[in-house]
Image (cartoon, rainbow, N blue to C red; front, side, top):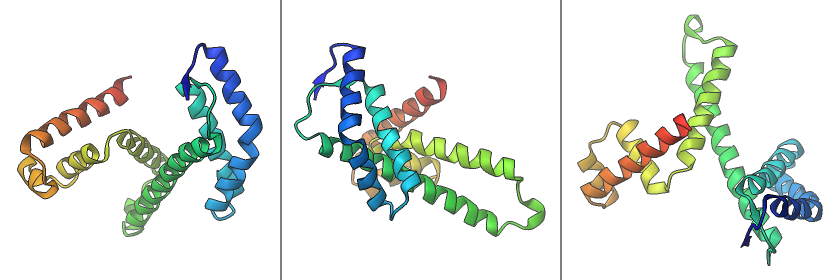
Length: 172
């Protein structure tokens, strides 16, 4: 892909991609989602929205491969959110009725979990794992380093990256 020369060029290029490949992308996603047309259409729309926000432009040698890659990543995020919501609802199922949160509180928690998931998705895998081991599992940096086979210094650097990323996501 060639960098955009202007915002209007990028919009026009994405518009052409949309016209030429939108139906194909929805069908490809529908098949991968087990026939779920509604979520396939949403993910296809998100794919083109992501291209618009990225401001990419130019001629793609393999536009369908590029679109499939972007859409597949979005689909993985979708499945992660679904799994996260399911885990939350399963955890709530064992909470006594008297302590159950309201539907509104459940929706707020589900949205917060989805937002946290999206922020963490923006981290490289090792950085995300270091952060989760330290913050969720309460592991010491030395134990994380040993478990992942990296130096203590790398764990510390990864934590700085993760915290800076989370801070930026929170305050930008």
